[in-house]
Amino acid sequence: MQQGQPMIVMSEDSQRVKDKDAQDYNISAARAVAEAVRSTLGPKGMDKMLVDSMGSVTITNDGVTILQEMDIDNPTAEMIIEVAETQEDEAGDGTTTAVAIAGELLKNAEDLLEQEIHPTAIIKGFHMASEQARDEIDDIAQDVDTEDEELLRSVAETSMTGKGTEVNKEHLSQLIIDAVKQVTVEDDEGNNVVDLEFLNIETQTGRSAGESDLLEGGIVDKDPVHDNMPTEATDADILLLNEAIEVEETDVDTEVSVTDPDQLQKFLDREEKQLREKVDTIADLGADVVFCQKGIDDLAQHYLAKEGILAVRRAKKSDLEFLSEVVGASVVSDLESATEDDLGFGDVTRDDADELFYVEGEDAHGVTLLLRGSTEHVVDELERGVNDALDVVAQTVSDGRVLAGGGAIEVELASRLRDYADSVSGREQLAVEAFADSLELVPRVLAENAGLDSIDTLVDLRSAHDDGDVEAGLNVFTGDVEDTFEAGVVEPAHAKEQAVTSAAEAANLVLKIDDIISAGDLSTDKGGDEEGGAPGAPGGAGGMGGMGGGMGGMM
Image 1 (tube, one colour):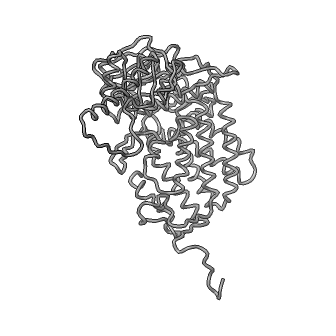
Image 2 (image 1 turned 90 degrees about the vertical axis):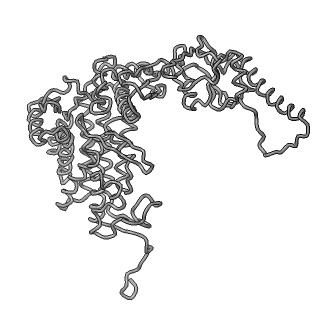
């Protein structure tokens, strides 16, 4: 204080929200994110249409895709999005569940804050409940035989139900199981390790999803560079080249004055000789097929065709890297230093109808899942659904533990956590009970999205679990409570553990903040409009900063 005036230590542009206003601001932002994706949960979940600034349209009900595509401009909201991204990276599925539980935890925490319970007590209670929940999941989970194809198919179909893959889920689930088996190896300790890096996914429009296929090897979506080239090669030596088969250009700009036609001819002859030498080098190596990442000169194409060598140009870098695993070749960056050891070995066949090359190697570890769909939007959503299913099947094979789905595990966990809360002293007991209530959001939302009465559903589920039916879940198609494990609704235990842990950690991170200090507005996009800003006063806490424009229309 100076002469009765407060000391100003922050710039005029800075913004500050503190104490209860900061908590309200953060909780409102986090809940808004959770509510944006809640309607996509479950087999009866709805899709979102997302249009970016360039006009590109994405139609999906995949939680992490929705949150990544939305133009969210709020620091707290972005912390919740990280929950979805972590869930996607660690478990592959369950992103909507993780975000929805995080939002519900904060909603219930807000009620506890209103009762003058300190955030520290709530955070401790949530942490205790989270640890207990993980132990209970491990206790409830069933160990499975990873060779049990029927169970793996149930896991894959459960993941795909409600997504664009649902119509052809039987066919696709079999492809997914076959693909995972192809890339599963045993480590030194005898554990199964699923190496999804050796599984490539290609998409193609204009066909039904039921025509999707699994290929042992790789696919190159290119044409031969010359009409007179062979289109197939059996027992072929394959060269993967990351160098242009073109005339080498100088690094500096030069001008040459030509006074005689013979001088011009010498330049042309020199260029022709350079290209001839490159093709001769390839032929001398013994290559029958060349996949080139860069360009191939027209004259070089002619020489390659005369040598009977199949060549493809402008192949994707990712395709070359994948093919190197399939055929056992090295990607050559300098043709002059290439040796026969750099060549791979395999069969190359041509599918003229789809205009694709199929490349298969001996004992190839790499496989390609070719997904087909009628339009770009359909095939994009198909790919997202199959990716999630691949991840959960891979998790099941690696982890070997599964749970009943349909909200069964959440209701059972809630019941066990309420029993556990009786042994917890202090105000943390209320936080543990709030955590249990939050888990029951999942069956409630499943019921809501299916057009059922969420209260009646929850009452029936609780009653079944009180009678000892641990696997009692909701059949969203009939509205009945039944044994969902027997019905084939199966989820990997690891995904559920990760969802509960991530949600609790995100909620605790938000609750621990009591002061928000920003050098400018609270927007995370400093290059955008400065209008709308963040709340600088208590009354603005509900505005969620610059988030309103990006998310307001989604609510």
